[in-house]
Image (tube, rainbow, N blue to C red; front, side, top):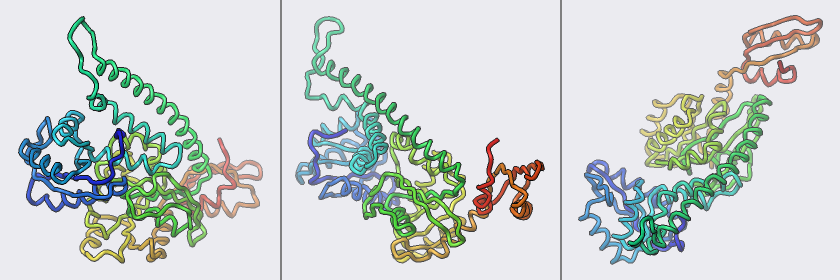
Length: 423
């Protein structure tokens, strides 16, 4: 996927819409693509929304529009064309021939940005694997400069075909190697997660669209040394920090990678272990940038990824972030009607945190945990707490102790942790 040289000077961004009413949405999508391009390192961009009634198999767009855009690219000396859609390898090759310039699609730009921002070994392995899988069906266009298959003996192949087969085998071996290495790293993550779950500390996963303010929230709550930047995908690596709520309940806050519209499936697969922090969390904190014109669509995109991870039914607190910058109160009202447990905050200014803490504590009260306990006689007062606030599933008196299996609220479970036994 990497180009022969990194072209970062001037790019034309092209998006498509099928109905006149969809043009504003297309323009907003192109604005997001512009931010992705700037994060990637492209200094100058021009966005063009194009009407497209029918998708053409060979070049995605019709010949008239393609000729018009080709002339525009040539006359304005663009270095690169970026299509705000997923296009096939064949369409990409045909567009490059028409434009006489490199063509990237939305998924390719996202992968490139991820490759730049990855810091940990796991994130780097995940990105390299996603890039290799993306590259595999596109190998042919990397070798168009080599000679084509020539006539002659049966099965005789030209230099280009030989090189293509060699390169495909190398890439397939690389994919297998990366998958093996990633499994080792993921086992380590699972071990860490198992230890965390065994401690019984409730976990809140901070999720949301990229650049919604997740890292800003984590930093404001815990003074964590995480990168906070006004860029898409400023941070890719999961950060876990301890935090104590006002009622002295200890919790863990996990900052996850940001979601984005049309997240490439290769990335969902590659980042599954990181995104699964959402699946194993007790409660999700869904951060939404309500000042963004695309806030509603971004929230839906996040929900789609959660459904794909089978985490769509997790308990959730919805944080309407950047309320100080939101001028459209109708959007705020719509979110409050659509989502339960909404809290208006400004993570940057640390406004609304008291309401946030109350909602987090209320959400924890609704959670229960099943414990197996052996409580000494001198601590029978804790058994009274179980009878009052929990549900006793099984009990048996053993000499001076009482064996109990019970379902308890999380705040009680944390106090009973010292009596927990394995069976």
